[in-house]
Image: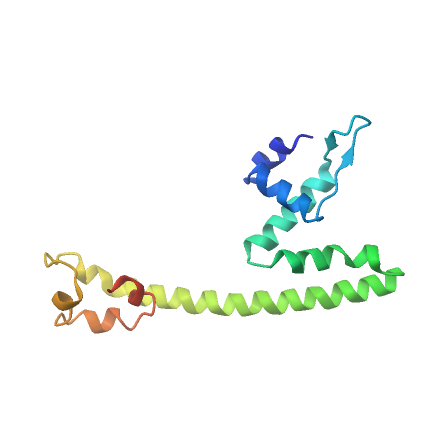
Length: 149
């Protein structure tokens, strides 16, 4: 299978997939002429890497996970190390989930008050909005501090 087809199938770029190859995360087989040959196992591996990387898991962490089995002396060691590593990933995802939920509540808070600004014809500047009764409610949302100058 060609890498362009895999990239299209996974919704990414050829460059991204080549980067993962360069990092040693995917090693396709080669034809006698040296052409890369990807199979469904490679596609599944690319998909898993994309998913982890998309959640902000560092490449070094993914590389560590990928290197556990080849460096283990037996299945027992490998499975224990994989289990420990996956527990760390699960803890990181739980931490991220907590932050995402907090941000969702913060955004919802802002969105509850923003419709009150819809009829406003005043130029949106700090000085103009300072005396508005809606401003304190909007600024209870952390994300609105990005919007307010």
